[in-house]
Image 1 (tube, rainbow, N blue to C red):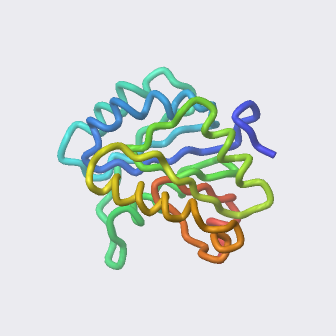
Image 2: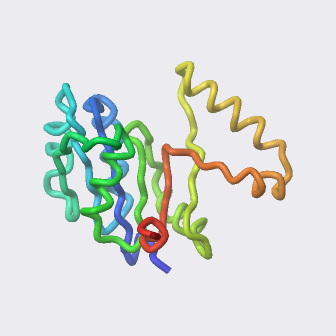
Length: 171
């Protein structure tokens, strides 16, 4: 089983206009011990690519990718994630939003949760903006449901998704 001590994990960050968030979050992602951390500067209008390059410089496995305009039928984050997945080398692909702060050891916990599964998502702790409070309330409501009811819901949080490589590329 892959762990941060035996890294076969690619952490993939689609980043459009995320310069300020990356200053706060990218260092914690880089310390998780993954095989690689890929950031896609997704046609940003701010300094996202420069900030990512400055922070990631010197970390083994860090790569900055520059996004391409999407072909017809592709949009936004889906296209960015697709580009990242094509470049990733890990057995496990972890997609995370640029505004997610990773606590020490979080990757190990996510990998443990993936054991025996093809995909798993994590609910992140939210900070005080309106969207964050909505997700916080939703998470609070879910915490009162019995485990079988949660299993039956089969929902995922797009802020953090981990896939076994074969499951992601399933055809």
